[in-house]
Image (tube, rainbow, N blue to C red; front, side, top):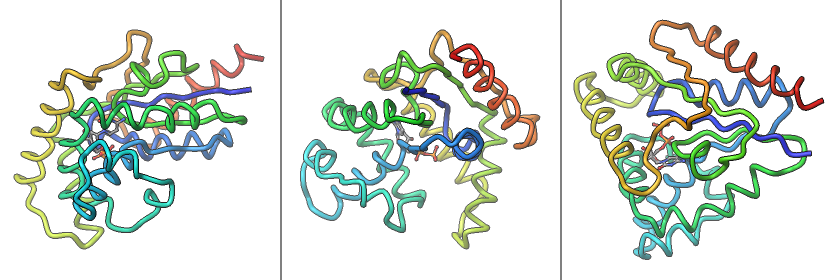
Length: 206
Ligand code: CDP
């Protein structure tokens, strides 16, 4: 039986950590859909293909490659993500993943609204831009990447504006999503709220 958990939200709100924890706790597979857009951006740089051709050329192994998590690739990803043909080329892969046996967690921007409108659980994970910039700044420092907090905040705001303002699949909570604002929460608390929402739906499904 398929069971899909859709987790959406802006950059650095805690989606990734929550998704990995939920997947591990319930034994579900996990897809970070941002990697599809990042890999598309990188394919475009490496091949000179059009954005649409680049999206069609992405294979699962591309998601495992190093270097996808840099700020530069994130910026490129959010640009190609505004192109409807790119988004369309990536739909089938995400929907197949979502309905796999044994359950799946997908995190991104449009999972609950466009990719999996029938997901059993929909979460919208958010936090203030300042808080997200600080978290991303710490992550970058820990990964040994040079960055200034002001620049990271600026980048977070620009990406929010692009993700929320685009006409195709803009970032917004699905009507039936549970919103988790992690600004004043520890990651453990946020994970606990997410897991409680999943557990409640799983109990209903039995
Ligand atoms: O990890 P972070 O939240 O910084 O970025 P990401 O989830 O890897 O996504 C990078 C970019 O891809 C986002 O800024 C979005 O523009 C785009 N994206 C999207 O449009 N739809 C998705 N389902 C996932 C990512």
